[in-house]
Length: 151
Ligand code: RBF
View 1: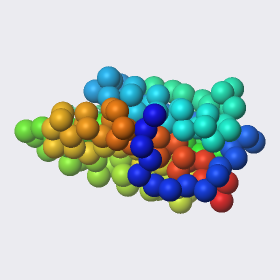
View 2: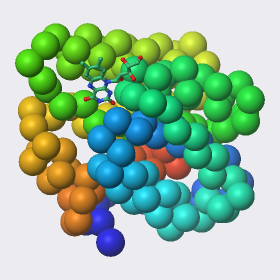
View 3: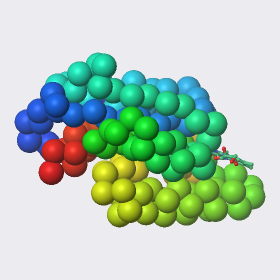
């Protein structure tokens, strides 16, 4: 089980519907983050049938995926999961900025909490350290979604 970095009060997500949109770029790490996030939802009493998971090609598509889940599935919150690794070109900067701005915009414009579950790392080692084992950040993102949906 993941070691949570944040302390949360007892959360009862029994009546909530939560969406997760997960990128396939660096799939191994995204899937590990997704599994931990999903576990946090289950541990917070969110019913399995009320967890809606979709996958998109890369982090750039997360904003569109989250908007779809809010509109079609009427979820109470969405977690966007992706991993960005800095390369030799400017893609990292453009994608990271677009996704963080797009997620912030969805929070304001839809009135639904959209959680920023995107790792922005300099190399694969940093991604691995934050998406696997005790330090898997996905768990905190799941708990954050429930806390925000209950606000
Ligand atoms: N998507 C990610 O989720 N993480 C990445 O590290 C990543 N790096 C990319 C690097 C390049 C050069 C390109 C062209 C795309 C990258 N993408 C990455 C995919 C991007 O988020 C998106 O799926 C595609 O650009 C299609 O819109």
